[in-house]
Length: 216
Length: 262
Image 1 (cartoon, rainbow over the protein chains, first blue to last red):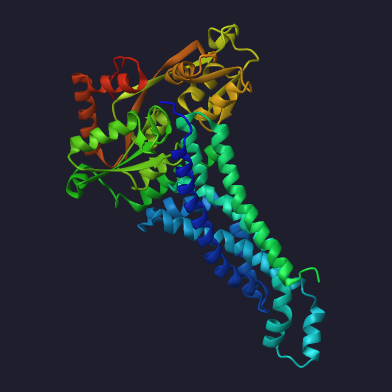
Image 2 (image 1 turned 45 degrees about the vertical axis):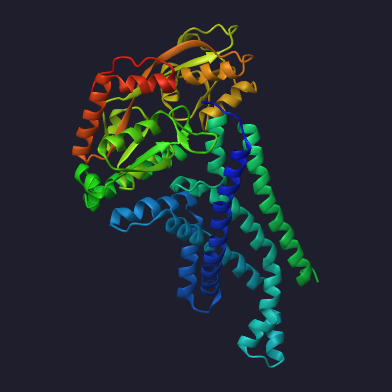
């Protein structure tokens, strides 16, 4: 019943990596789109919109992702809404990511000095021109590092989707460990695979930063 | 934290399922008319369920699931589950049956219904000969590795509440804690200790004391009484014709003791 850690297991882990990467990509796209809305609601000069965004951010950041996954996958069926694991994982990971992206981007927008807005106005630019030509390019540069930093977290957090039936990298490692009784080589391999993804992301971020001259 | 969360969520699910009524009940007739039964099995609890070299699930519980689907004459839809999500899966109607090394307790029976036992595990504490322990009372400051929340963990915590128990996520990790010297003793199923010793003769995993034989049960929702009755009949017949004993012999390498019916 106890067997060796073999090449087949490595293939199984690489296959599981598809879900890890796939879920992270979905969460980035879904969370990014929602995050823009959250960031905008958070900064517009309309108090109720700010309150709504703040409430949303606090609710999402203040509850564990594990609990959110549980609610979507096991909670909704109680009200007669059948959701499959893909829908539940995509929804909860996107919502989770949107709250963090929203805050990161709000911070980036607000860290562009008020004087930049004023300087733009002095040049006769209207609000939209000031936003797109003066403030956004600067905010974008500032946001690269924290955005990618959160992406790295997101990649690792996809392991929670194991609870609702996904066999992603961590769950695959757990299953192989249970069959081989060799946690050390299995989890070392998993760690190496996570590292490859996360390190590539960090490198990509640094290249982007250089291209946009963040420190200029 | 994880265990607590599971409890809270399970409680919420039960409350919720009462509110929602039994709209998603799948009893025996529904399974037969649909021609498909959805059974949850573990893939991280060898020898009850684990992945073989080709990553297909094998084990005692997997065989049970296959045999039950065959006896029902319907197609089997196997779902891998974990200790944490098996009851939510069942309660929310995502599965019809759970076969997952489950011991029956009155608390668990508030949530789901248990069939008569189909097999069981005998758990014990194992370790080197020179540690002078032969019963739970002899435990002093030795560290004991165990998989969290398993029958062995529950029993050991009850038998030796003051013992130095180190809890790990699963049997394999607890075993690694023992082999690396992080723990002096290892509480597990006797079959696990036996197989580990045959694979690595340098390991000293001799039985210190055996805690007890724990029957394992099939779980269904309370709202499928016909299915439960059918499963009990299935287990009853399997006990009489020796097929369940053969299954235990095949996977656990031990005899199936006489088990009372539920």
